[in-house]
Image (cartoon, rainbow, N blue to C red; front, side, top):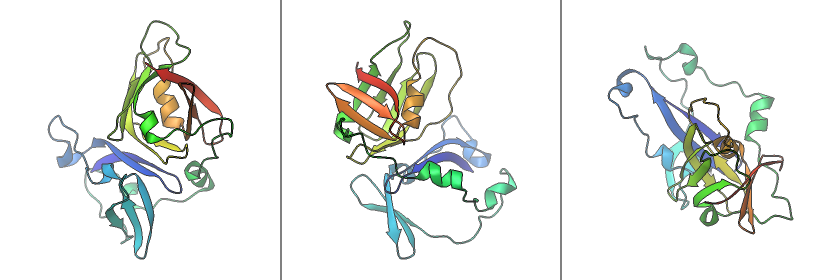
Length: 206
C-alpha cells in the first residue's frame, strides 16, 4: 500500500505520496504515482470525476466501484469509505478572495526561492517553488516539501509530507506554505494568507 496526502478546493486538486508498506516499501526509494502527482485540477464527468493536469488535459477518470479489498499490510479501516463531516467540508471549501488591496499571485510569479521579510536568528528559513509543481523549504532547522498549484487568481494549494521537529530561531515557512490558501505579490513582497484571508507570513526573493 502507498500512503499519501491530498487537498482540494472547488477547482484545484493535489496529491503526493510520503510512505509505503509491504512489497511497495522494498529498497531505499519511495514509490511514486507519477500520473496522480501530475494532477492539479478536477471536474465532474458523467461517470464520476476527471482529473486534469496543469494544461487542462485529462489524466484519469475516477468512479466509485465499491470498497477496496483488504490487504495484510494495511489496517482494516482503509477499506471503509470516509465519513463526510462538517469539519471536512470546511477544510475543503473554496477560500475567500484575495483582499482587494493586494495583487493576486500567479504561478509564474511564485516560481523561485523566497525567504522571510523579517528573518529571525542566523538560520536559513526559505521555500523554493519549482516550475514542475513541487516545493521544498525549511524553517531553518526542519525541512519540508510537497506539491503546489495556483489558479492564477490568488488561490494556492499545497501538500506537505512528514518533517522533523527540531527547535530553532528561524521562521515556520513550510508551515505557512502548507496552511496557505491565498497568495499576493506587491512591491516584491509575497504574502501567504489562510482561507479566511488572514496573513500567515511575508516573504521576499532570496
